[in-house]
Length: 536
Figure (cartoon, helix red, strand yellow):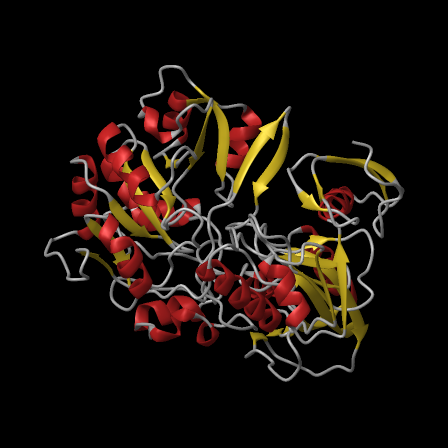
């Protein structure tokens, strides 16, 4: 018997190939209808045989794209329409946006094959991508996720890219950052004053300069890196002096997993994280004979490694064929540079050249950092590849709220329903540039998730910039939370612990409930309050 159903899917279902997946599924089960993005997620209507509709719905959940996260699937029967085909419609912009936004995704294996295939029209093109990979969060200006609401709106698709974009059988069907050498962004090498350096291939010239001992700034997905030969002690020392970074280790980018094994003792679990689509920096024990300058990680037993995660990185590393220092493009404690003018001003005096491009980054996003402890992943810095994917809370937020975080290693979070939208890494708020990034990030998240917080939660310390922001802002209610209790409650939320716990917070000092400075604390606590004074 012929039926028609209207389905609504919420979760991370935009920018991950969900609409083309639905289109192919509908054709597989000989269904007609449509699918479209809305500010809340994806809506579709499907019409056909009742058994085919049941199979379609089952496959929708069982075979969803690997980068998608389906939060809810609801459906209802609707009157027959008599559609003769299944179509992808233009996005519906009428309602307030509540859709989830995908993190940036490392280059997939299909695009990587094209990148190094001389017969492919995107051979060595630093900005190739498809539905399964490429920039997302860092280029999205607003939702729904369509090209005109990203920084790719500045690039009109050529006829070939347009054909791929509109062909449901193509891997780039509705891939919003789609581009090619003819119509997309271009890379260039500039000197510290911003003048273009004449060369046939900017990436090959950048690699040559790196191998000769120069220090370069390299524009990635979420901002600029400072890059140099990791085995060259002299240039590593110069980098450390330029960044005013005395002892903190530098991250390394290695061309492949085999090189990673030459530098560190890599467990299978750590290798799985290293090669995941999130492409974080993974900390692992350094091999005694690792061919890396001592100045990369002085007095540290570990090295932090990541693999290339954009086509530009893959091309650069394929040329140098050795580990590069690839550290955040900033002075210590400043936010990472992501605007071209700012990079020239702040990084230009530090480097010999800048490898840059004309695809704008809308929001900065530094690299994520993790380590594997006894087979379990421990995230140290949650940023690129993770943000803004929400954490699921073990309870529902009673009202929309904003948690502004502390002063050091700041992140903020917006909460709605059972979602905690934890921001990308902001950094220490003890300088104005970082504080401005903090404020800009909050405004961007409020717009992305259509969330106007009624309540703000802040640290008890009255002089933290984040506390002052909370106390001076236009909020209905404000709640101060003791520093160490906040750490304990965060771990409880991460692991879904609802009962009272004994929490140990050894993270240094924090403003106490008695107005004194507390150190590391052992607290008997629930989510709402510590049940005792500190035991230390």
